Amino acid sequence: MELIPESANLMDYLEELDVVNFSHPFIQNKINDCFMKDSQKSKRLK
Image (cartoon, rainbow, N blue to C red; front, top):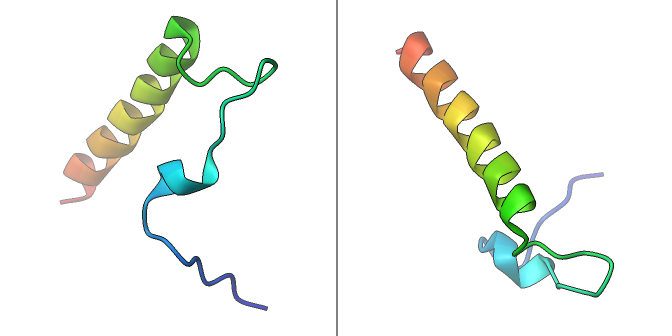
């Protein structure tokens, strides 16, 4: 089974709730860390 998203925008699938706060600075820092690590890996592969 293959997942075919209707939207390429990830934010369309992320909804903030009281218990899920994507805007919290700690969460934003973790997200940035993950993207930076992925970016660095991509640069090393090139």
